[in-house]
Length: 93
Image 1 (cartoon, rainbow, N blue to C red):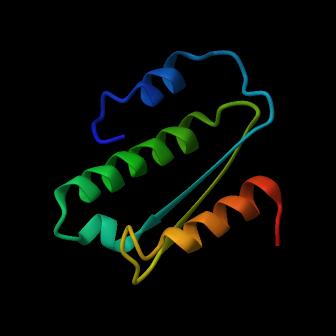
Image 2: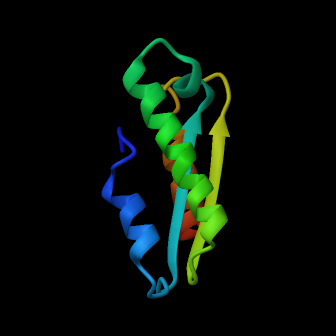
């Protein structure tokens, strides 16, 4: 999702059918927003736009959660992000 023309935005805006118990969890790192790599800054900004779209439109049937990890880079936050995904989507403690 490196640009604002990603199909996920179109899908959210045009899909009037409710989600059927879909769970979505997003984990970002603060350094993705503030780091030197433009690709990660773009990824973070467009992901933040997606989060805003989901919160604003509140799609029916979508269980959504998000987290920002502090002090981690895209690479170093991977393990925590994966654990967040498991906890949020599969209820593994």
